[in-house]
Length: 390
Image (cartoon, rainbow, N blue to C red):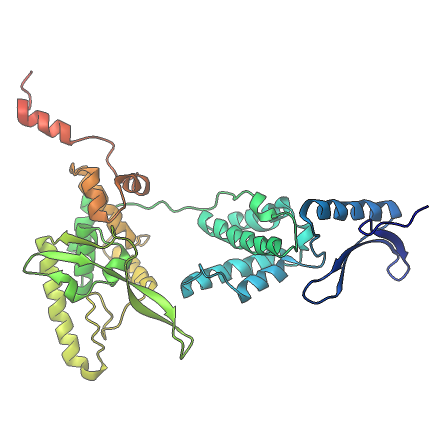
């Protein structure tokens, strides 16, 4: 019998482990110079040989064999230790870290080579849906796991990306709503401070995003020309000296987002009242007031965190008799709905909302866009007259 060729592997009984072991020699690591071997085991010689054959098939297919000892937790920790450059925002890092910790808690101990799409679905994704988490959160968690395994694939640690093959179950989804005219009027008629009156009026009448509202500066508002220039939004970043998250104003990313809007008279009046109120705050606080020139700032002039505004808005709506399950972004939904119901063209709504095109408006606000074409009807009435019998 001839000598076994290198790459054929070997099968032997390990008395210490009480099991049959299959070993495959992959040669020397080009960086360390150490010999690399991959091992599998089985209760019988046949079982060990079958698993060794699987290793050889993987080597023939991929040119290498993934490590057998790597766990899901290992690759997740590797990802967090060296996050991709695409994770620019500290908030993005924080959110994805929560996704990673969720993966580790559920399937962290599973060896990567044993991980299957079924395991990902059964032990990670479905329990998240059953716990009432949103579909976007479930998809985000799956995405972080998929990215970590993709890196392991790149480094020859595993062959198949089980996360990529897993299906995302339907989680909870709270549909965005728009306020009716009656609800909007009830909100405006409630006991609002100068800050909240200006904020809600600008949200409904201009359709600004919550971040765009909080990024407005007084220099962006031209009372003489009755226009508002939308240019910035506050973003969180890590302070290098303290390591804490801080807010900074940054320019909006797209040309469509950076827009100039005609300012309704009611908004201008509310903003003038707010400016007067801020002037009083400056006098009262003196050197303790940080004047950043921001319109919707905190009581001492500082940038406001969006989550704090969200929480206060819920209470505001509850006090107005609308219920407390409202989000500031739904002021923007209400803006789209009111314009659509009153016959404003979808292209004009898209421009005002800062969308790339009207297809985005139709997709994002499909429930707020009136299912009718009003302009043609209005033109016919003007030409022939209502009830003309023509």
